[in-house]
Image (cartoon, rainbow, N blue to C red):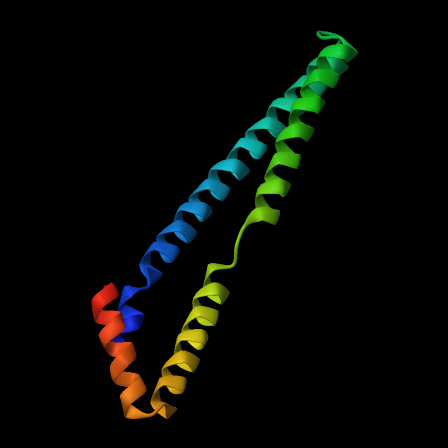
Length: 116
């Protein structure tokens, strides 16, 4: 029954987590760039080069980007805790199999081989 652990794609979960971190870094870079662009617009408005409407459009764009990043962070899944929980569940299942009578274990082994 120990080979059940080999069929769970834990590596896929880790790869997805790494990709999520890269996406977060890219999103934060976009926010940083948008903030710098907004600061330049504030300077242009202060100098009388652009209207308040142009400044408000830039502020709205910045707010939208920040809200999108917050939503993304809220959706982020804690993959490590999922992995630990899966391992615990599988361990419990394996323990349960060890307490079963040998005949039942043979039936389950046969079914597992048949299905895999």
